[in-house]
Image (tube, rainbow, N blue to C red; front, side, top):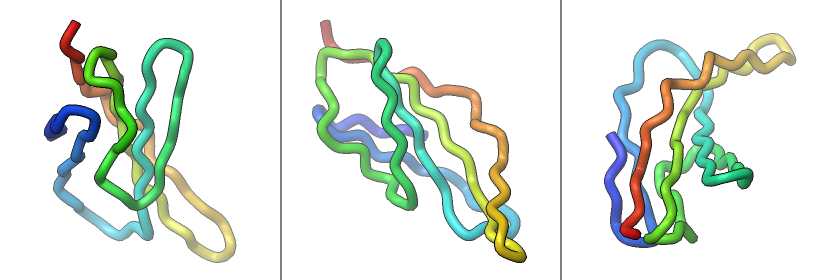
Length: 79
């Protein structure tokens, strides 16, 4: 789930399988940001709506393999 704390959001998920890390993508309008290996999203606007997705990755034999992006979670701001 995604937990809203004003200008911060925290992403919580269950980890299954073997992976080396994860990425969280969050976007509002035409602005998209991606962070790696952190569940805290900072610098958010309390009045904007964000789409938040995540994916895992596995590094093996010199290559990086990514899962598909999750279905977006919609975090609605206070208008």
